[in-house]
Length: 211
Image: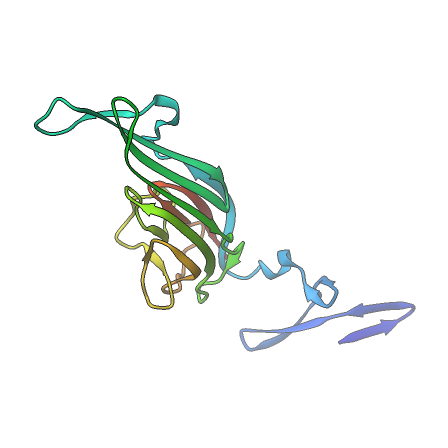
């Protein structure tokens, strides 16, 4: 609705609230409601993200020494994660004491960020491009929505998995989308996170329920 008078022109947008009609002026940008205005609805709001480094990463501490059972042979395990948000590489390899490689595995995972906001009826999705050179020592990728203090590789019984179109929650080499299995309604100020678990390394996207 457009109201004009005395040289003033105002555009009003009407909303239905509890059965009553109310005029609410909304800021528009090229005909679209701005993100901040859209976020006034109840739902999950992204607050920040962080990188979680696997505590046993050997890049700084050096490889882990082991022995072959029943022998005096020494072997060394190397576990290293490198990269950044949206593209991360897992490298795992095992060597003899002389440095010769016994076995190795490598995975490169690329992904899109989850949304900055989703409602209690939305099932957000992410796009994944994961290549695996060798799966020796490489766990499957797992993305899930869980309590904020859960870390990659762990979680609560109430975690909601992101699944592929076949309904699978874990993927090795994979290209496509993963979608949250079901929607989640929170309570005011509740904290949750979408967690990307990549061989116990990962990225956590923190959310807060706002009303």
